[in-house]
Length: 231
Image (cartoon, rainbow, N blue to C red):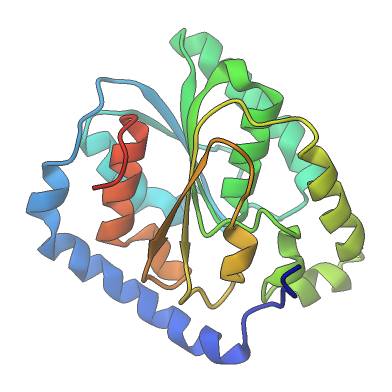
């Protein structure tokens, strides 16, 4: 069994450079515009821990540009309490599915990806597919640089890890594309490797912050939402 640990502090020094992915998006714009298009299918995008829909503005704008009906998660700042957030996510998902009359495609960054994946586990009939970006599907916050914050808030990280593992007794029934990076300075990349059936893993070179703006990530997301394998 792999001995998982949070990323080293050195990795955090790389994270601010993730913002440099934004000018790269402009450089690669012609290629991004040629990616597979949507046809008005509904998509919901989830932010990571400590972030709100504002953090996914660029990603949502791109997905709208290529033809999807894109929604934020609409729940304010993601404060990281999965037990209280998941029921709200499920309620929002059910409402959007009913409104659209068809299943929703889910994209989640970091903890948002975990929430998206677990929503799909709970309501597979409402979900077409899931794409996660640097999401800690093993251990939750335990193998991330925010683990200490959770402990200070009174969370039992060992209990969270056990609960996450137990949820896997109910199999995922929708395809999941899990994007991860060994340059991730916030989430241990091995904690993003989900061994459940139906999960496709894609490695990129971005930092954790950069995952939300990387053109390579956007290509993978666009193809996954269209039901295609990465090039």
